[in-house]
Image 1 (cartoon, rainbow, N blue to C red):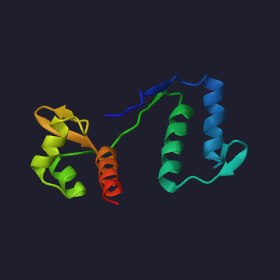
Image 2: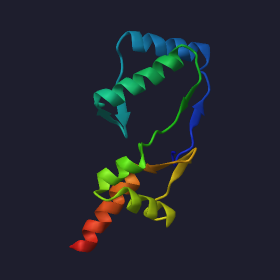
Image 3: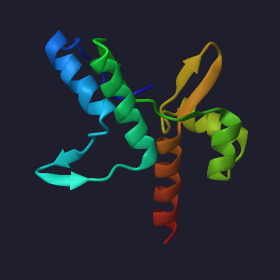
Image 4: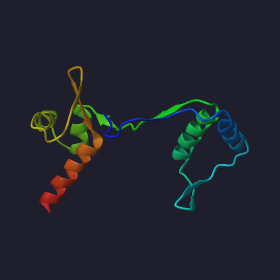
Length: 123
């Protein structure tokens, strides 16, 4: 349940893949954004290194986003409301819902946005 379509990068040309693999073996990994070196958090670093290692082996890669989805019970607990009220909110379209079989799945970010809006309306 991602709002962004997966993106596939084709395999690198063999010479480019070999050069990338050599750089990774040498530990030469620096990320630049707009000309500024940036130290990635460990989880992001691991993901980027995995992607680069795959390209260095001559593989094509697909990057996709994974959003956290919740069950009705999890959404109710997070929002501090009843399960039946969660079902009502999804039935009314207040919270977008994805069905997996007969089970509802709700994006965590939708629940948190609703909770924030409720707090804002109460202030």
